[in-house]
Amino acid sequence: MSAEKPNYITPAGYSAMRARYDLLFGTERPALVEVISWAAGNGDRSENGDYIYGRKKLREIDRELGHLSRRMKSAKVIDPARQEDRSRIFFGATVTIVDEDDVERTLTLVGADEADATNGRISWLSPIARALRGAGVGDVRRVTLPGGDRQQEILAIRYPDA
Image (cartoon, rainbow, N blue to C red; front, top):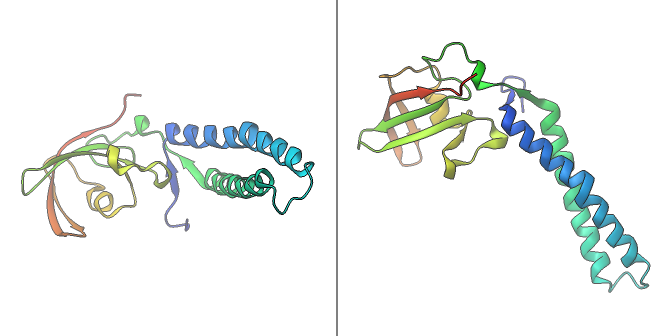
């Protein structure tokens, strides 16, 4: 991520990322190395499925470990419960919005690494989050979506309790 877009993440998001890293590094990778060592001792490696698959899987795990390590190193943990101005939409806010067709949605602005749109957790860098940032209850914001521009009215803003 560039310097102008910090890699913000919630404490829960960072904990989940750390848990994934620890599982891969402390459990899955050592078990796989053991399988690869065993398979390597079984002779011809060119036709040894356990060895070939194990090496491929190990590369995937190492790639993910590298990615997680870089993301954790650049992460700036922000606790939304500590947000002082709870009348405006900032990182970590849970927002209820309604569009011009009276379709209500509840979204939580989270870090890019913890976004999960199917569960209403959107990246704070997404177009809708950028349009909503800084808005208060009753404000109407124009959001440019793939289907065209939509007006979104902010109905409620919540932050976790401290």
